[in-house]
Image (cartoon, rainbow, N blue to C red; front, side, top):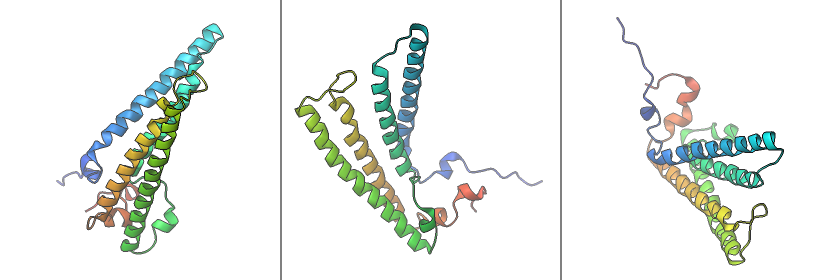
Length: 186
């Protein structure tokens, strides 16, 4: 009697994935839950009272931007960011690895620059005492998260760049990804 083959455990399948991604995963869940609760509460209030919470739109927009940044950090760490497959899936393994590392370095550079520039925006918001247009809270309460999340994405991109530089790190994933074949790698 032959033994049934089982798929690898989730930890084994994503052994190259940082364990600290739980932070981004939980933040994503919390932000999505907050968005759903705020929107549902506003719908109930509008339905029963013909009025609306004025603050829900401003908070929802902020949460959607924060969600995109947190999910972007997780996508970079998991190497699931957008790329042009036509270019990255052709050529030798060394070329694929070089393009993957170039992509990671570019992401790190872009978001590193965004950290610096958005920190200046936060400083201006604080210095000039800007307030939000909807509910009048200090604008820096919202803008402070852009450099923080950009710093997280920069750190994730640098970590990915380092992991991609390890010998044999990308060859099996770039040549034949396990997700596309549906079979266990030998």
